[in-house]
Length: 306
Image (tube, rainbow, N blue to C red):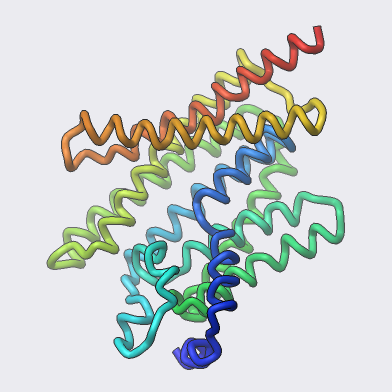
């Protein structure tokens, strides 16, 4: 906490805003947009490997949160102040840092992939900036962000290794995706057992993580379907002009976000209150992002070429 007390003393309105923007680089919207950009516009095979290991990262992060059930800094010390703009996104337990893990996994995967040295340096440094922002804002300790950085370093190397070794090969890709599904389902069992044995009354931090896990399970179940259907029927290619790729990214991302939000409204209206709608919603979000959007733009691309 000593470092957090020091950072608390140097806060200014300008730095508060600056680090609030920096910390957004680890939020779900940025991760989704970046993943879709790689899948649709850069390299779909690397995008798939990033999706695999990204799911592993989020699931592992959630498991560690509930296993250690660490309190946030302002809970540890009630006199410690947090930058209020960061409180709303600081859900779940404190250890490890989800924002840091997300940013480190994403940008280190990109750093490993790109050839440009300047981009490598920028992508490599961003996770450290996000980690520092989480401490400056008062929502995580050095241990929280340090462990997240270490885990993400291993996972990003694993992702790049998968890509280099298996690349476009279908069978290993399906095996990896089924292994990811198994891991997420095992995480669900652990979550459930811990909920029954570790807590007398389930805290909100546990419930938020539990609901997030259903989203990850839904997304992971969609992955082998996406790969098989694309391999046999769609076979979309990443190509076209920069403008065409920008149109794919903007229109496709807007469609995915719209489907995600509309499904939330519909499912919450028709499903029982305790049903984890995220399971169904993220399954279809995966299919839309992984199959529907690529199929539409592949048809457009072929038509233009004809």
